[in-house]
Length: 383
Image 1 (cartoon, rainbow, N blue to C red):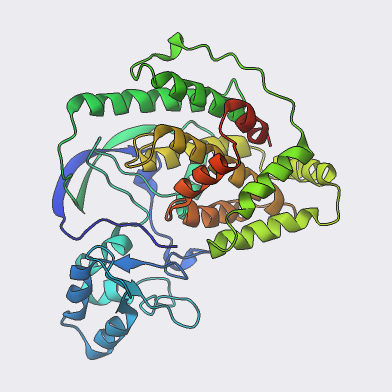
Image 2: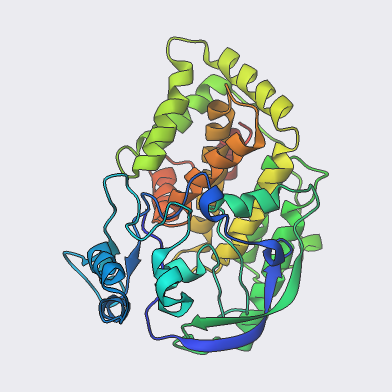
């Protein structure tokens, strides 16, 4: 999966950033990582960093490995000019056996490609000064799942080399972003309701915002009668949706094929209920973990203010992400019991969700299958 990164023209920024509570405890696991971001992930770097790396003055043995580790793309741009060439094991040639980076060790952190230097951190200074960590990193999920407390946020003084926004964002839009996000997190952390109903409430809030972007939560009627959950019918809908991803993402293909194999020549309702019971017994707080994980992802993406992506489509993508992750964890945990297994499934899924065009694809697929209104969405959200 290609990790997104911005262009090379960055400036040093020292500010008070809003960060999730786990951020202060984040530290790369290095050689202890079960699914290292140095292995198999397709990482691209901008043109100026490529030539910087090829012009480094270092030991000949290290220089040779650096020169062989990066190659220009067939259709390069300034922002995506070259890619890491993995070895026969799918590993980065600069990834040492102890889990650390030869380039970092030999030449210092300042010469690391931005994506390697900051991942899984995602600093932003446009709508607000914020930084969080991507759910595709297993350490992020481990920190999120350490407790069942609601995810909180705090200010931390941090330094980043980062792109300055091309245009100044109006102050009223920044204030709206903060207010909307506070309302969204308030809805999603209301544990008086099951998580799937909270996501429906979020949909009603975003719909109300179409007419009045400054609407308050107490002005909205959140009453909603959930339709009956038909497990067989809902599985057919999910399989039709997920089939549209066929061959688009290898890692996701692997997970979906394994999950679907649970139901071969078996009673769908029986398998589903058995797997759901097993997951709830093995990972007792899985709904709370989902809540924290989704909020962390929305904070990371600046939902629902993502560029060139309508609020409605962002909401569809959130619903699609939720049902995909529920489907995968229910079925891939069928013969597993540990929290590490659970985290590995989710982190692998997020290598696609967080670092590709997944959101735009799944929202377009849901529109193609007419899974767009609250009635059709609430059916699959209950799974």
